[in-house]
Structure formats: C-alpha cells, structure tokens
Image 1 (cartoon, rainbow, N blue to C red):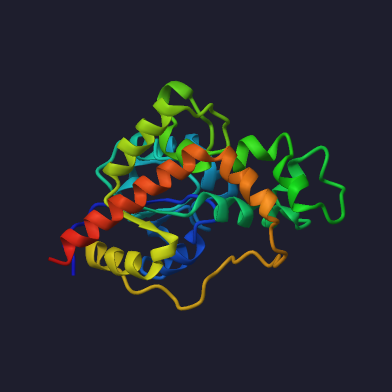
Image 2 (cartoon, one colour):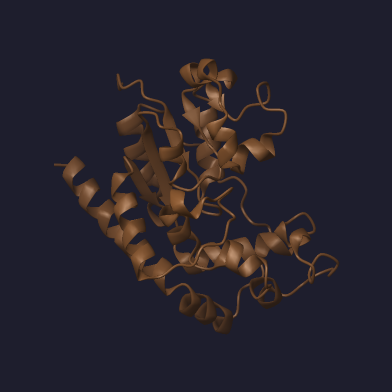
Length: 253
C-alpha cells in the first residue's frame, strides 16, 4: 500500500473509459474528500468543467480533498498549484470520436447546443460530426487540445477552442510525460493494474459504465474522414502507447 498522501488528479478526457474509473475511485474516498461532490458544490456541472471553480476552492477544502475528478485539461494541474499525483486514460482517436458522435445523436447529448441539430429527431453520424459547433469543440484533435492548453490561452473550460498544430502536439507530448500514471483504453486491464500498483487503489469494476448505446456502425468513409482530420491526435496517441510500453516494461523488471 502506498504511503504517498498527495491528492490524486484525474485528467478525464471524454469517451475514453473515464466514467468507469471515476466510479472505482469514488468508492475509495469519503464524499467530502472528493472534488466535486454533492455537499460542497451547488452546481456540480460547473464545478466539473470550469477552471475558475478550481481556483476558488477554499483552503480548508483543499486540505481535505484527496481526489479531483472532472473534465479538465492538463493545465488544471498547474492552476491548482498543489503537489499532485496525476493519471489519465487515452483512446484511439477514431474510436473516441465515433463514440462521442454517437453520444451526441441522443436527445440529451451535446447536440442540444447546436443550432442545426437541436430539433433533428435522428441525425446521421455524419451530420453530427460535421456540425460547425460540435466538430471543433469536441471532435478535432481533442486529446492534443486537452494536453496543450496554456495559461496564455486563458481557457474557461476544456471546451474552449484552440488551434492545434505541430508545436501544440510537441507541448502535449511533453505534458503527457509529466503524468504519473498513463494508460490507453485498448490496454485497460494493464492500466488498472498499474494504477493500483502506483496509487494503492482497488481494482476497477468488471462492467464498463457510460457505454454509448447507439450501435449503428460508422461508415468506412466517415472513419477515414475522422482519421484524416485527427492526424495530430493519432500521432499523440501513438506516442502515448509507446510511453506506456516503456513504462510497463520498466515496472515488470
């Protein structure tokens, strides 16, 4: 069992298997030791995504918080200005985007933010992917954006749109190297074992949570379009897989 008492910060990228991990982690801590929680946060949605909510945490709560979860970019770990143990889980960009697109088809998905899709009963996967609001906010090189936002960008949430280029990819890779425990969804069991080894947390539940219910297959054309649009995310994901391979190999010696 680890004796490290630094708080744990989960950099939760959407549609990577993070809800399952959150359920695992929440069962290991008292509710008032988790940020956000039902007691301290009147609006858990705001607390879950707004960086200003992290900045405004009172000192007394900082002292008792052991787990931070939420859809925050890597930058949030610097905003807190605390010694932290960090972990994240990433996913193949094409599979991640398709999963997210399917989630947005439902009536309660992010498509309600869209002017063109909000009242469409059953939009196609292609229509959701090409939406002028959702595409840059959620689908384009999203994992690189999550790890390359800077203080100079002055983002309010992870939804802020920032242009991604090769320099952002390099920054995202450097930031990824700083994450204490890194995993990819295609090696979920290995990641859970590593998370347990490093942080002394119990094994994850067998059942995956928040699995997208839409079972329609994405066309090959759509998959190819997503892959083309997310070239930088693919490079980032490949770097993450190689980093995982090296770390896991070192830990099994």
